[in-house]
Image (cartoon, rainbow, N blue to C red):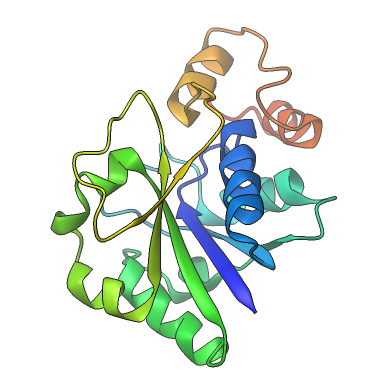
Length: 187
């Protein structure tokens, strides 16, 4: 099997995340994309939203797509989430499968600062979702896929919620309801 992995804080997960996953799945002929929410990101702030809550939102966001799966590896492991640890765990879980790590071009430009980045490249194929707002500085050694451009970020959604603006269409309805029911991102 060909398995894509898409990690992140997903705080909250939005249609941009789903579009990236679907575009990469289709472009590379992957069998599935596994979403893996971070426990504590070494690069981003969780804004006071627990890993368990973000995990639940990712499950809601991906439900209905049989090619999408959600794993709680990093949340269960606890502590700071490093990609190399997750990659090694997935290589044990899927020893016969090809694993594709999906990252955005913004992250690819800083990939050399990631813990054990050379080992990551040895273990998996690194796929870059090319985003126009973050031009890719160098295309090698990556598999580069041009994706549909959706200029949207989780921080924009958090700001919209905080200012009591609508997020309809930016997140799945179930995620929107979850955010409202739990009064997330209100400040």
